[in-house]
Image (cartoon, rainbow, N blue to C red):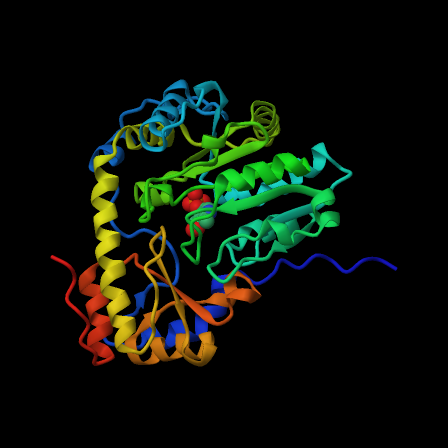
Length: 377
Ligand SMILES: Cc1ncc(COP(=O)(O)O)c(C=O)c1O
């Protein structure tokens, strides 16, 4: 008997097509807050650098150019307060490909292990990477504040684990986890810890954090320009940390041909060098989070200000996230994501991505006939 052929699972956001139709039907169109795709412009200097690098003709370095790696390391030093060695900083083509191909490279290195541990409510690509590598994904429970509960990991799962993913500030819940504790757990159990830190500069409670503050042994920090610089279209990120592990990954990824295009590398370095545009973007997100919390409060929904990130993680009335999603689409022309897209434990919440400007958010309030507090001055 032959095994059933592998069928790729439905892409999570395709499940929203019904609600999208309803939101699209509003005059003026949908206010799409379902996907965390930035819509504010990247810095003009970054866009200009795309056409002046003279990096089109030759193949780019898979690891990233010296300029790219130095700019990323300089950024880590300035913004996260850790000294990263540029020679241990490696480029990736945005981080989604890194996240979802990682399990196969780790399994190749450790065929005796087959499990990816990830937060029970999290970015779906952690689990999807395991599926695409023929590995197991196992959820690590989260507590009532959406923080990882590493004490709940089954020792047999830990013994089979290729890695643990952590994500702080977290998508979708905006929680801040104790990254030092995650690093310590990984070291104690012999499990590499990968820390997805793409929202680090949108930390609201305290300074941005990185797992590398706990040292590099057994840990890897993963960063992206997509959210920081409104540059998801560029596809540029990097990973750095445990010297042996990142070197291994860079070698396999070089064989595969994972390459950030040369002109993109040049533009990305310009983005890493500049912080002013991120500070301005922080203020935009802070304003929008406050404003839309007030819109939701008018609907009787109490969404807490997140510890970080640009999402509101809102408890749906009566715990019916799909019902609330449909209502927001039908009445407000507003598209949000039901929480079960991020794991069964998220089923009673919706995620609202504040990626549209205040004038579009006000359209939702108007359509739903509510009067929220005006945005902070
Ligand atoms: C937690 C998290 N990690 C990684 C990514 C991937 O970002 P990119 O591939 O654009 O770097 C996202 C995008 O939404 C995300 O929310």
